Image (cartoon, rainbow, N blue to C red; front, side, top):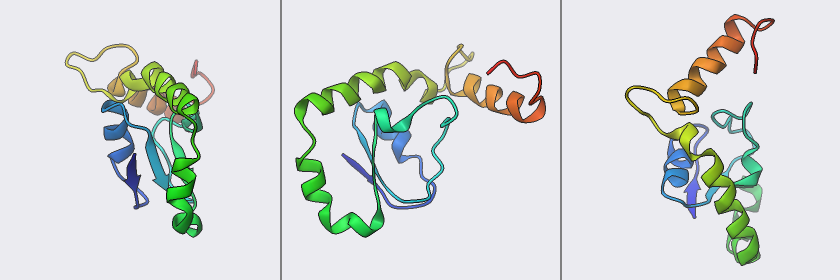
Length: 110
């Protein structure tokens, strides 16, 4: 598990690309591409007030749940990968879709 402690960090993406389940310790973090993905399916968010319970929280995740989360990560990993030239569904593609949604909110096909 990769522990994240700041309001912004690339670690959830690094954890995803390495096949690890990101453990996000925050009540306020804005995760990349949350418009496209339900991060709760492939990461664990823990409130900072529960940090003293972290070991118990992690130990209580069943092996089946870990496997489910890893399978969900495999579905979305491409969105965090950069390619040259870009590929549909990769990080660049998702950023362009986010920008399209912001610039042309009524015409976006998201």
